[in-house]
Length: 256
Image 1 (cartoon, rainbow, N blue to C red):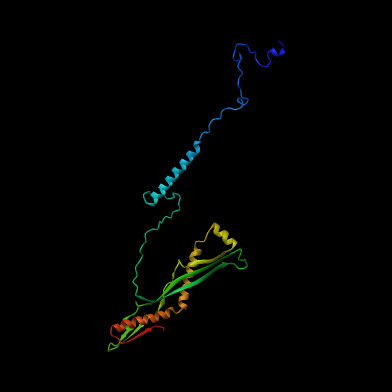
Image 2 (cartoon, rainbow, N blue to C red):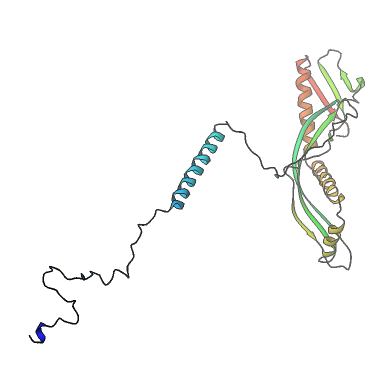
């Protein structure tokens, strides 16, 4: 037989009487060695833990604020908060004085105190201390009855008229209202600023307050406060004496 009966070089030899080749051909996919089985994705537990933590913290915060609003929990204060301690000593009574005065009028005043301390031939920017202080307060006008003797009250024989001689009204000490008083402006020179930095002047404020009280007293004396006190005292005595049966009441002020 010719070359056609010879077995091929690429295939194994087939022997008669067998139904299949002696060596089976392996079935191999060309991409089996390149691809490996991929594991299914695993669920991350970090996100679930974070969500659980947020929910727990929200419930705790809500419960805390709810219990605090209901007053079931004590209130916590800041341990480093600023506090003020009052170490004022108990008051000491020095004396008691009986007053025999009739407060007949009261005036409400407001003055501007302008205090300036400087030196000649020195510019204000170098050495100057000026304070504008708005002082508000009240001043009373009163009549002192402690020195009114019996001879100052003259009654007619028929007890129908009476003449009363009184001292003139006086102006009491001003009462400075610190709630309504304030420093409007303040100027200080360079030397004054340096001096206050090393050694402040504690008497400067006291000097301003004393000057304010003096200005309030002067304003009261220049006003019609004393005349108003005379009128009110006269009206008070006339009403009282008429209630006692006097028909004519004369009130005289010394020096009027």
